[in-house]
Amino acid sequence: MPTRIRHSLRTLLPVIALLALGAEASASTLNQNASWTIDRANTSTKYRVVAYGDSIYAGYNGSITSAAKYSAPTVDAEYMSAQWGADIESVRRTKSGAVASDVYNNKIVAERSYMQASNTRVVTFEMCGNDGLQARTSFKGQSGTCDYTVLNNAENSCKTYVAAAMDYINANAYPGVKLKVISNLHYPGYAADNVQSSCTDATTGATVKMQDRFLVSLARMNYMMCDTARQKGFTCADNFAQYMGGDYDSNGDGQIDSEALRYVAGESQDSYVTRITTTLRSTLRDANTHFVSSGSSYDYIQSDDTHPTYTGSTITSGLFGDTTGSGAPRYTSFTAGKSPIWNQYGHERMGWAVSTFNPVSP
Image (cartoon, rainbow, N blue to C red):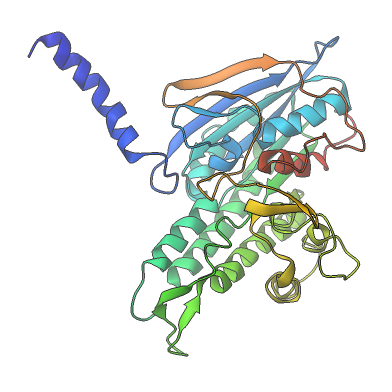
């Protein structure tokens, strides 16, 4: 074989191997970083939003070479640009497929310099989704007597690294940062999990409805994220409520479903978990059909039944490098703080949820 061909094959083999792993975020990890500046007319002042996380903040779209340009952090930057009348740089330091420990160690800690820049005003992060997904996959594969350890371990790991991340950001972010936000977890595959397990509960001897068991575990993680945020000077964008509850009152209790599901500062874990898993359980809907009214819905989840939907073009992010670029905002102002598509796509909804905490000035 000619030397040049052998060299080409050696170069391509790692690429082929990664492609063979596919885009299954829970099975492998892939750095997907990006920096996109909302370049507003008639201003040269630029502030920065730094977002750390996994495939959710990355804008993962099933590709190992591209991601959504307008994932949630950049949507938030667009809101901020309009509010502050400034250019906003959205810096995403993300790793698709990463569990909480990986996001903490290899993104937040190892890449702390991004939040230490003097023009940084917002730091946000999300994690734990892959801990939950991997635990769910493990549990679904069980036979015999159910072993809940995998779910408990995911909860404990999430608790450990969420607290560590907040402490680290508090200690290391630029002192002029005005806002720190955590985004909690939606429930991907909610409808698909409405089936019985293959394993049986040690006490009852019966199979377990997986949706019931996973919802309790997820609710405990989401409560922990929001309540830890309250204690450590962060705010909590409640994506579970934004995704899983409709934007109308479906049960006649006088509350919009997505508002009624939100974490309430100071409530107990038992109160929150009961409210989510029992009291308001009938209002939960799979985010593939997020109802904005009783007769109209939008799909918040891509065909992989996990990642948020988005609109607009993509940027290079992943195997072949990462984008650093800029462009004019899609919207230069927002009526009542909402874009015309704020509730039509998963990333638009998440970005809006983060934006509701934006400070009035830099």
